[in-house]
Image (cartoon, rainbow, N blue to C red; front, side, top):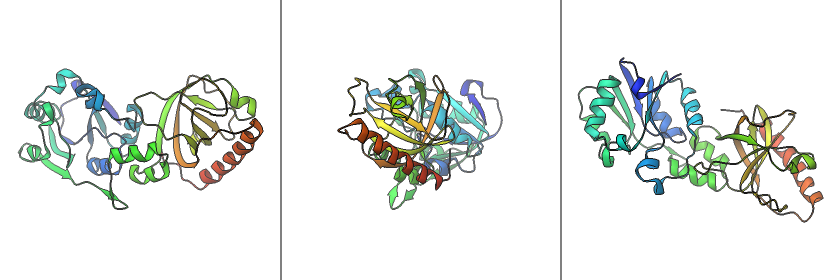
Length: 294
């Protein structure tokens, strides 16, 4: 998939899906279906227009990009969203971006999509244009629930990553740089790759999870490790099964499969190790029965 900034987009006829697409969930995928180009915004528009209202993001830009590429899209066009762009009236967005720059022949959006200054642009406004055909995609439902980024964020925050995957169309993914820890896991026989999550990203609720990481099954702890007084903040600690290597400084992508248990404080290190052994075995069993989907 080709990735292009809007200012560098080459003129050619395009079938364009437009949206923020945080999480690239099943609703987003229906909007994207049948289009050769995805037009999205980076950063999230709320980060510029109303930072205090910005929710935790389900996907970093890198994960969003890769998920869109996995849908067979030919080109991802990225609008570098800033204050100046936020003041572009909806009519000007249609004329300059969709018609002149991207030469859209077809435009697909979700039914609740808005755009332009003060979000005055609507799907109905797009449908009124004659330069392109407009497809307005209704909200998608799964298990009787509307698929939405806000609902998925709630599931992830509650640790319900298995349920979230039903709405995402794949596992909840998290990516971050592996940092040095205090080597506590290595001392206990479970060396972990540690990530300090960026504050703007959604993170699963505190607990232990079965996951995939770096192509290996993993037992992953999300939390503050209450058994030890480490003074550290929130960490994602991934123990990769059957892996022996150095990941420091690398970007590690974790695909959360299922929550095993909540985070708890143990009375002794021996109790903690015994539970970790059970967690690792359970993670291996769950991952062996799971087809990994990036």
